[in-house]
Length: 183
Image (tube, rainbow, N blue to C red; front, side):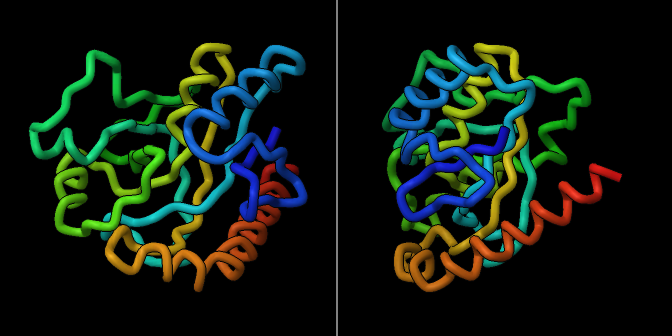
């Protein structure tokens, strides 16, 4: 089953689950309870902390939920803030891009470089909740992301500027990948 955030980030082949950590958790849990999929593929946009450029396509199965205050030693959490997707073939955290999720979009490029030291390279608002729900229901999951912007002071402007073209590139990638898997 393909899922996506929703609002202006929808795809004809994906079920919208809501924007941000809370909406996506509630709606994906509802889906898992009433019509549990065998496999989840989350598709969406992401901001880059510097390694990836706009329009790059990145697959991931690891998500983090690290707030920027944590990097400045102004916050802590008793929760597991990095989780890995349920999967048969594990890829190490050193080679698998970690996607950070928060209900906020980062705009301080210098500050997010602290996340890169931990192999965290992308930001997507929903992916952590998707992995958490899939973990709870033992559903294998993969995230496929298209980069729309860098996480800097131009983040919103660049997201808006690149969003439509990025969605097209992501759809082309998914269709091509799906056809290859069918062979």
